[in-house]
Length: 381
Image 1 (cartoon, one colour):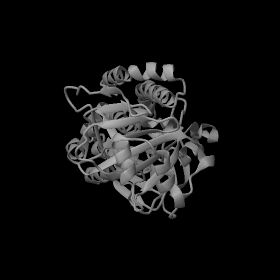
Image 2 (tube, helix red, strand yellow):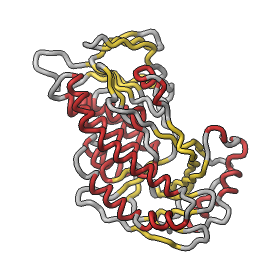
Image 3 (spheres, one colour):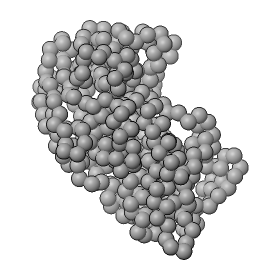
Image 4 (cartoon, helix red, strand yellow):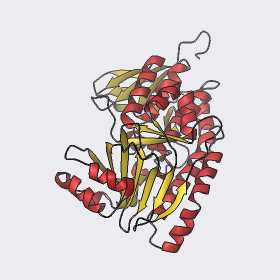
């Protein structure tokens, strides 16, 4: 809370995505006057679905939205893995931790709505259709001029403006732009098959496909292939292109392919990572989430890391000044985030591995690896 006899400290959060809204919840809940600015004029999110592993669920509980997430999501029951010929190669059944499920999946739209409502309940103000135009940090506070012509001064600025963060470029230059992995991902939501409750992963020779359940009505098809920004598919033929890539796939992937219609909204993007060295802050400005550490999606940890950032940042700001708090924040966050990035990248690399023996050896231990990651991340962030 604010210190006795002093006015509440003021924070500006740039970006109303998962990390920005989570920071809005945590800072406003601990006594800060919080303003969130979002350059998009419509309060909506881009994407299809996401997974919440156990540590993300603990973060959602700390944000006060855990019950809403469980009500709108789908509890993960395990995954079956198949080779390109349709042979079952592995099956993983999770063991739930004692306090939360192993994993819950949901639509991005539901999570965005839940976090927006939570931030507003906590007292944060969300301004759409505007962002910063200039930022001046004098070491004591930060003066901001906005694209709508207004100005304000803040004790703290939090950059949660995503993987292509303009604020990161302002602070650290463009030497830390997103790094291509060499792979791209197709994503599409389709009607769920109620008779199939496990997720599935199919290892094709050219593409790798997974299907996850997002809620009782919707499931989520993800297809990974080699690709980059130079190979953007033609929007007019995306549906046919994606279906062609999945010819020969059976099971849940085949059923998801066949459920794609002319009205399906298909998302395609290259997989990129951001590796910003420590520290992620300068003066009274700090980056969180994808702006500081975008991670490959193969551990479902992007949202988790962003929400944990927000929780730890607010916690450190409770007992000390801004710049000391940011230094403490880095000490708590950097090693954990780097571990997640390394593990997710290793799984991505193996998923696309061409050597059958190396791929099989890695995949055989993937369940144990995921269990160990879950155990390690059970520690408080």
